[in-house]
Image: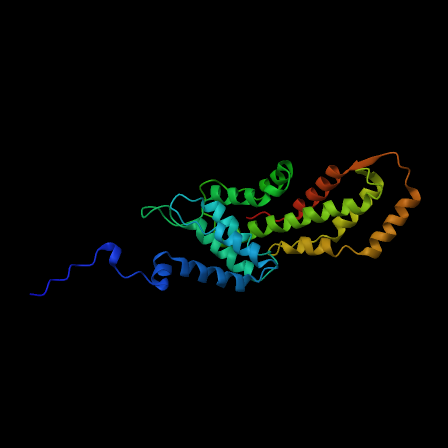
Length: 255
């Protein structure tokens, strides 16, 4: 009588295919999402972009929603079209309910935490001035248009801060970390005159600053050099903070 064949043991089962392995581990969907984001954002450094994307792909239940939303916003510059879809996704991440019994919606405390995280590159005393202008109540629900305006304002503020700091570097030809106050005042006045703001587009402030007319600035500086007496100077921090306060004064409140 023929001997009955024993069921295959776990070690004798057919090895899983590459496709089955990728599907089971969710790697295929992760890679598909990464490639889709890469094509959508078209970053200058694709390798660094993918590294940041995978670093933010942690979907564990206890992961920090603010950190994930912030990472999504950093995937591309705010001037790129793809930033709008990243902005929407960041809002969805923050608005997702904590559990089945919770309601969806972004609360003011998480919104403020996100804005603070965006502004972490600038000194605390600088970011604090802007955050007071963008203040939201802790438990209020933040609609998308308010979220969009606040996030854009913060990213544009970072660009402006860098421009103001760079402008001081241009003036500090002697590298003494101090520049004649009269020259600084001339530049700051020209910068203030160049800035404009509209209620719906915070970009207009930065655009105005970037269009600071070289000819007008050159004439003003020539006149200042003719009358400068070098009896008072201005340090970098004071120059940048003065420019920052002018910027913030032109920012429209979120409400």
